[in-house]
Every structure is written in structure tokens, then in C-alpha cells.
Image 1 (cartoon, rainbow, N blue to C red):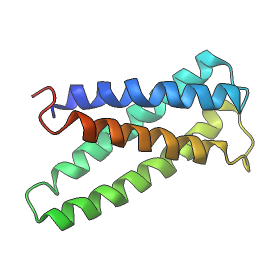
Image 2 (image 1 turned 135 degrees about the vertical axis):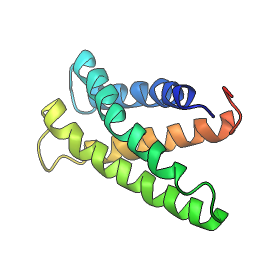
Image 3 (image 1 turned 180 degrees about the horizontal axis):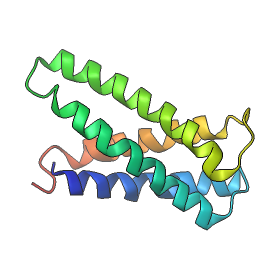
Image 4 (image 1 turned 90 degrees about the vertical axis):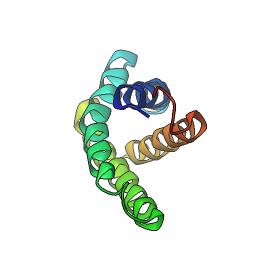
Length: 119
């Protein structure tokens, strides 16, 4: 999958999930929630994409291990970034739940789209 397609798929999947969760549960204004969702993805997506490129030539087990660790790191970074971007309280679990849910949805969308989508 080409990078622009992967980023678009990620944004199309994750932004609505983040926006709904942050707006309904966290009472964050919809525009602020959507902007935060876009911003956290613009920070983490290119970094994960670049990091995973270094694992594609090795054994499958190394790739999937790197992928799992990378996704876990992305969830953590996105959750941490959401707090200041949305004004949620430091102990609020919502950023963690939203990040896990949004990234799981995005992962599923990517797997369903397949490696050859867009390229």
C-alpha cells in the first residue's frame, strides 16, 4: 500500500472514532476533537510507517513483532498527546481507550484493504 493511501485510510477510520469518543464521553467540542485526532495521527503515522519499512526485508516474525510494538507505542503516544490537545484531566482514561479503539479500527481497515490497495 502506498503511503498517501495508508494515511488517508487511517484518517478516514480513526478521526470519526476519536471524534465520537471525545465528544460524547469526554464532552470535547467536535471541531477540537477532530483536530486533535488529525494532529495525533500526523505525528505518529509517518513515524510508524518509516520504522516498519526497516522490518519488511527480514523474517515475518520480526516484522510482526515490530508491528505490534510499534502499534502499542503509537497508542501510548496518541493517548498522551490527546490530553493537552483536548483539555482532558490527567487521570482520565478516555484518551487511552479512544487511542486503543481508534487504532484497532484502523488496523482492521488496513488488513481488510490489503497490502496492494492503492498500489
